[in-house]
Length: 399
Ligand code: ADP
Image 1 (cartoon, rainbow, N blue to C red):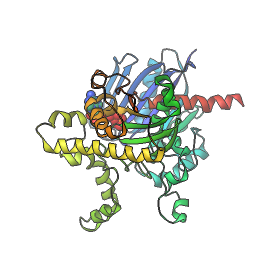
Image 2: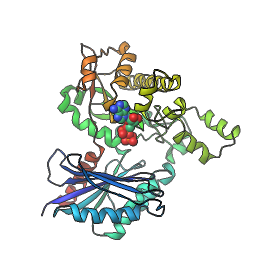
Image 3: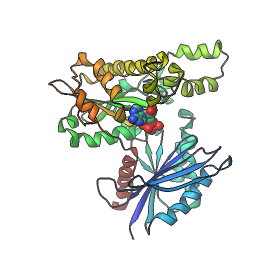
Image 4: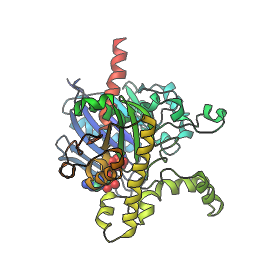
């Protein structure tokens, strides 16, 4: 009987999942991709098969009590009916924070789960949510291997200078330092560099993960050297609804002058700012592009998004000592040719020369000339989780 891997990604009100055939191949054999959204309000389950065709859908309108527990029970029943005789070999989880110590994915035991829980103060909005499905599965199916793959782990190669804030050492020792996120995406890109262009595998590369969350990572020979996200996933670029880097003085202003509590200020900076806040219209790049000709707010939001990417790319070039390639990925990076053209335009000084036709046509390489090149590579964070899960469980069997 063949086996499958289940990959889970728990969000604040959603649970995304993908099912892969465990066939040992080095390209993904994805059977299903789906999600529960509206958990806690109007839960909705949707799944598509490997061709993207609908494979299931269900709604539970107004059932606010339907959470991860109910979603996982439903998923287990659905998988039982749709696995086609496959046996579930293991579950891999995207866990946002691995703290200062977890530099690789890890097999989950009660002790490790407890240790990951101690990192919750570092990511209070995300870490407890990531751990919930892990605990539920451990209780429901105690023998099933579970692995956590971390968004922070890829950045463990960064030099100390890239990780430090200018604060007393005692606070740094307590964990107040830069970690970086989107590591599962950056690890995937690094694995693809040699296939796209062998020079990328050895060169100085800046990758731009531009989705709802957005960050840049500077690689030297495929290893993370610096990144724009820091202590939290709030830092760095303008995002869909997050402010990105902001003077800490603004946070004091929000509290002192506008009377916000710490939680309210955090909620504001995570959910009301970024493209949404600047445009006053939407966090969705497609909506902003449609509106930009007639709506100055939409135009300003896009211009600030691009300006910050170009400026932070310059900062990463300083950390890398130059640049050989820029790589675009995620929802905006993979699909929005205009954003790519504008970023490359803002980086002409660094020698980038846009190939407008290749960019519009969705080619992999979108620049020409003798200078540094820009590429588009579709990311696959779930496949990174499967590969890391195989490495962890394979190493255990080998011992
Ligand atoms: P998440 O971080 O939630 O995974 P995604 O990587 O899916 O986000 O990126 C979402 C963003 O990608 C949204 O701003 C969306 O507008 C943008 N996007 C998706 N498709 C397109 C497109 N064809 N053109 C422009 N932007 C797009």
